[in-house]
Amino acid sequence: MELRVEVGDVATWKGDGVIVNLFEGVTAPGGASRALDEALNGLLSKLISKGDIKGKLGSATIVHTLDKLPVERVCVVGLGKPDEFTLDRARQAAAKGARALRDAGAKKIATIVHGAGAGALDAATAAQATAEGVVLGLWRFRKYHTTPDEVGAIDEVVILERDTAKSKTLAAAVERGRIIAEATNLARDLANEPGNTLTPTRLAEIARDIAQEQGLEFYVIDRAQARELGMGAFLGVAQGSDEPPAIIVMRYWGAGHDAAPGLGLVGKAITFDSGGISLKPAENMQDMKGDMAGGAAAIAAMQAIAQLKPSINVTAIVPSTENLPSGKAYKPGDILKASNGKTIEVVNTDAEGRLVLADALVYAIHTLKLSPAVDAATLTGSMVVALGNYRTGFFSNDNTLSALLFQVGEETGEKNWALPMDEEYREQIKSDWADIKNSSGRPAGSITAAWFLRHFVDQTPWAHLDIAGSVGMMGDAKERGYQNKWGNGTPTRTFVNLALALAAKK
Ligand code: BES
Ligand code: MN
Ligand code: ZN
Image (tube, rainbow, N blue to C red; front, side, top):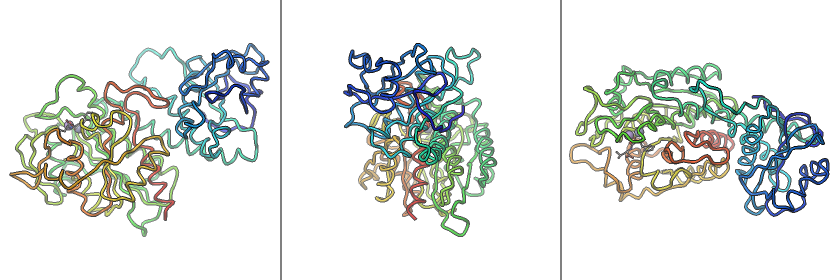
């Protein structure tokens, strides 16, 4: 799909359809909507006064132009109440409009920048959000359907700006939005891919291709190398599977080799989590093909970071394996030794994410000296219970990083919320047989998981994002704005914006 900025006007633009917007409660349309209303002899204001168009958030009304305009259809998207308007609502409106016109059969569409006029957002910020909304909203996963979708595809999207002088700034913003949204869509593609095609080996191949295209340093730590590095926790999980495991490493050197090693992005990538010997119930076990969503976001973020070129060094570390029961599989009661020398009693083989992350974090922090280090993982069912499928709950040992993650979440619409890590919770993972155990049951399950990880990061600024709920891989999540209902790419945009924010700080 082509996406570009053009200097022009919605009332005279030639294509299949144009998107304009309306705030709830507005009776006389302004800006671009007014131009269209005039060209349509007052049809839009008539529909508004009769209550057919209300401007409610999430609404998209398609109006036929009866040949009064060069386009066949106008789509009016609702922005909701003016005093509740946010940047993320601009993204949501853009997505709604693009999807509505696609469903109506349009191939070539134009949209105004949402939120810049009456929404009072900075024009470039609004243009980036509009681009993100369109690209994210039009994403589909139809790879394995052998019959074509009844709904065709949009192949051209134009973002219209009347002012020639402004259009250059907007073009750069739209390009930024496209890069970030396409990376998010890549993370979605990976999360949705089934476990039989997306093995750790295949994930590493995809990451290698991206690294080659984008000029990133790349290597994989295989089973033999992990053994040499003493990664007993990672290898414990991997030993039940016949698929070779892989720790994928991608490095971007935006600040150069003489600067600090920079940001570490660590992503859990269990390509299928059966629970292992502590086998999960059969119901909804298929959702566990998405247990690599954190790793997918880390890989995808590297693609965007390489394209956006911030002046910071960033390294992604993605520990990937299957978690399966077999005659070789690790068992409850086993004691594993991680690469920092700590011993772990396995009480539940289904608490495998923290084990693979332990060695990945030691590698990120102690070996590569990355700081800060941020991990993302579909780590606990408890997080689904705590925050549902909206906000990501995160944990951190550093207030500055914590504040930044919150702020980035508000900007991207990938909402993040800090959860507590009181020392008291740490007691729960003490073991009678080893330094720590990998599970202490249901109470505060997400917090004790975070404490487990903290044993492998020491004093380095670190944060852990538990995306088990927010990434939407439980069957009950719903489509929301530009967000698809399953495997939505979280926290790719958080990762990217974090790198941009850290680069801008220096
Ligand atoms: N991948 C799961 C967590 C998960 C659950 C992600 C639901 C997405 C949706 C993780 O490996 C897991 O099984 N966690 C266990 C930990 C427990 C055994 C301490 C859990 O949360 O039940
Ligand atoms: Mn598990
Ligand atoms: Zn898991």
